[in-house]
Length: 363
Image (cartoon, rainbow, N blue to C red):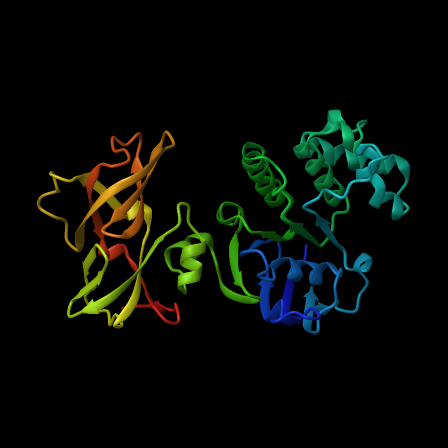
């Protein structure tokens, strides 16, 4: 195990309008699983490649156990990378693929077999070791790729969107298995993904990036409940948070179809963005509003535009006088497209941001 630290890491590709990384500072503790998440082009994969030694930064340091490895060849960094595209040799068996890095180290064949068998048992692929990649499913290929990394017993694992090529059901299954495996091994891990579900469920901490700049880093719950800006708030959460630009009018904040009270003790700017999580919007019949209305709750008239019944919950898409909203209702909600409803928005749970900068406004 090891600590990994990035200090002032910068990388600009020729012809690019902006740097892929702009002074990235990030620390991964010994044994920690840190997930870097962000949209395509945010710099997350660039950071991973710089740690692996597959690219060279224009500035800054990559520290592994306190040693700058920027000029150290990839094979001497003692890190193992699991790729999105598996990168398996098609002419070798699963056993030969997993044993390949051990063979390169000159490990005796008997010891190679023992180490590979242990890793295969851990991954549940012991019965597949005689097969070649063309005879394996996508999930089985990814397990072989993970096994090839595990047998090396590196200081750190690097995961480059390893589940993105799999179907949804298999991705969910392997996500659970991967998280349990990494924690069982206790190896320092840097995991890159664009999938906020993977970030929230896998990471000990989550680092959110945009345009080569780190936006926020912290435990998943902290990032979700206390985002530092409107980008972070909008990126994490499924369904996405409702972000409505409002104008202040005295102690009221208004937009098309939206009229809520300004939160007490908070200096909300004249132009602001209010963030309402779908789970904090309660749906009521148009003719039967809750009485008495709970404190700090505003009622909004709306019409259902679409309903997505998912079994345990129903996602309702609403039109509140021209403002689109998304709400989460428990079970199979009785509402369908065209129904008039009232939306109870709990303002005390809302997040507030400056409309211009997108920065968080706090009490």
